[in-house]
Length: 334
Image 1: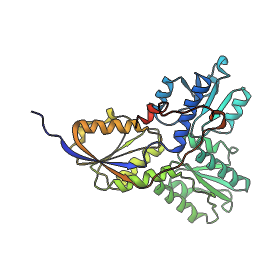
Image 2 (image 1 turned 180 degrees about the vertical axis):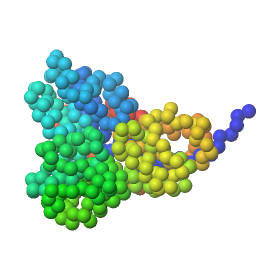
Image 3 (image 1 turned 45 degrees about the vertical axis):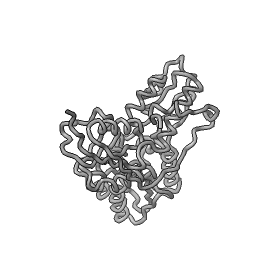
């Protein structure tokens, strides 16, 4: 006799998953493969997601850490720079090597680069709030000469920072930080250095803020909150923290449905579900399917805003048609 499935509500966050910058970066690799043929080289992970990287590899993308790894016979093939942005030395190196490159840096990251350069042009020392070693931070610091940027990671850093000239400081932030944590760091800096100049526009990107807002709204009363994302994805890890802080009993980062340990899930009635900005929708579908096999699932949409942003690919690729079939490996068939 079949046992009846226990009821389960899944609170599905909206917005979730791909932001416009990630979507554009993946499109650039797909379109480059369609236009120029394989291999298309990609410097570093195009976005922080293993599934996406493996899907692109299967289509002919070759991921390298540095440009030196591109063999001489493939120097005419395109190399794509990741959505996180790169130091100025990287395009310069590509030009020296006569490489043809396509820069998939997210336009919102490029905006932070411009804000940092503007601070410096106006004689300010740049304070960057972000995580050491993150590719975006390396890229932003690499827009300016050595010593022109100080990285602040925590409130403790902000409280002990001793600038050479406290009257001439400007700050920018990594785009994928926790809105709440960053507010505390900036408040500490502003209290200590009243002359600290803010960037002309908010650095934390709309997608990071929107995903955090949706998780905050959905978290109260959740027995479990799952965030689809990679362990090296800054914005995904922040969503796990936001869910726990906002009332979920437990919050976990998962890369695939197979990461869910069903034996330790325990008795659950309400599960929150969201995805970081580099996590594909097809994995969200896969996780809902896994729950549906075990529970009688009803979906409740926890939508706080609707995103309409769309970033166009560069002109070189606009003559190539992008079909829903091209993107089905990440978006599923909807």
